[in-house]
Image 1 (cartoon, helix red, strand yellow):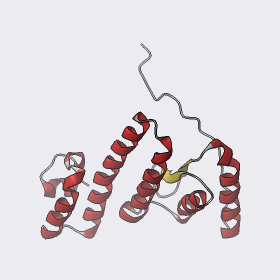
Image 2 (cartoon, rainbow, N blue to C red):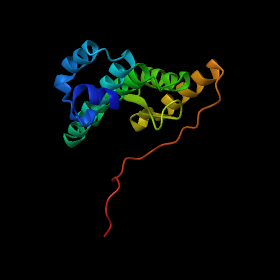
Image 3 (cartoon, one colour):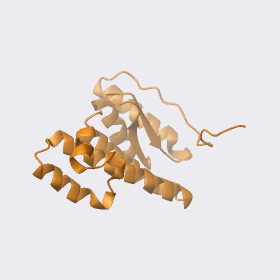
Length: 157
């Protein structure tokens, strides 16, 4: 990421506008930057854009529309950053096929957790589908637990 920012002449990749991403990737290729650098730049700039999309969707009260953005983010983590794993990919694929609005890995990468956005009436069916998919693939059973949206961190004083 630092090499990409340096090659683009910006302090940090957050300074690259999403609309400028195709040109930035062309400049990186022309400068001889590796495919890895280009993938990382693509992920960071597009993920920053996805965060902005999710904020706008939540501000508009369109929670359901967040689902596809989560899936796009997972694909970028899997394909550009290459930090997903078979188990997390299985969660995302199975959960969305079973009716979840969207899903993506979350956390530090190279395994870990997935967040699945699902309407409450569908939660049991999605959980069952993921658990059965894990068993069929020979994976250890996943731990599944609900997370209720709530106010984020804030100053108390």
